[in-house]
Each structure stands twice: as structure tokens, then as C-alpha cells.
Length: 227
Image (cartoon, rainbow, N blue to C red; front, side, top):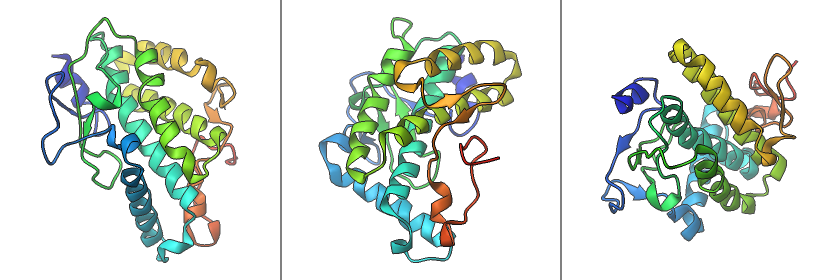
């Protein structure tokens, strides 16, 4: 029943399941291609760049590549954290999160199609996330000149965003969700990325405001620049 509970929480939690060790069959692709072939991530970054530019009525060249890369990274991290986080909170274990085990479809938009292998209670959420997609996507995004501080801030923001979305969708899970988020945010790689004095606020900016004409876009609610 837990799988049905997770996918009912919202689009970033929704995902399909495939048996462990199953090869990706079109239109599914294996996510490890992001590391194996740099052109795959470059294509997604450039597609995101064009999307952001069009939203502001601009040519793609008006949007810095590093901005598009940061937004791409934030969206992918949030998409991968959400279902694993919720599955763990519901006590059903954690799916394998190495990129070789994750299937995806690079559809533009936040909640791209995602398929995970079944969860297991023998897996640890922190290890699976930080040694899996978080480390891999950090490595893959570095060539786009996004600072380490921003990338780590994106991860912290994604964790907090997942907590907020889960709590809003299922208030009865708020206590366990808060404990899980706090545990993840205490990871050594994230300790200088945010403050939680009453309200979560990251200590960096994802740069989304710079995608708007004249760099005058709106700021995210948790941005260091807001307020």
C-alpha cells in the first residue's frame, strides 16, 4: 500500500516501479547516461535554457548557461529526493538510488517521468541519496561553472521543499517528515548551506531570477536574497 500512498502525494512523489536489474526500455532511459555521456546533460541544460528564455520573451543567449544548469540541477535533485524521502517516512525502506538503477524520461518540466526499483528496509536514505544521485549530479554539473556553494544549496532547498510538500499533502506525517529532513540537512556537506531559525533559508541563490529580462525575476521563498 505504501507505493500507492507515495504516488498520491503529488507529481514530484509520483513514479513508476521496475524490477531490480531491469534494463531500461524506450521511452525509458537509464540515468547513468548523465555521467557516461556529457552530451545528455548538456542537451537538458540547453533545453532548459531555451525554455527559461522563452518564458521571458528572450533569445536563449540572453540566459546564462550556468543559470540553466543550476535550475536543471535543482529540478533533478528535487525529483529524485521526493519519492525516496516519502517512502522512507512511510516506513517502507528506500529504493536503490545509484544512477544505474534509476530510469527516467528527459521530458521538460519539473516532474519528469521517473521509475525506481522497489524499496528495501536494508538501505539507508542518507547513504543512498548522498552517495548516489546527489554526488553524481554534483559531479556532472560542475563543468557548467555553477559554484559548489550553489549546488549544495540546491540540495538543501530540495530537501526542505520535499518536507514542506509532504507535510502539506499528509499532515499526519509531519513529525516523521521533519525528523527525516533534519537528519538529511545535518549531513556534513550541507551544514553551511542553510539556516533554520524558525524558517528555512538557504545561504545561496539558485540564480532563477537571472533568467528573467534584465535579471529582474522573482526570488524563491527560501532564497538568501529575499527579504
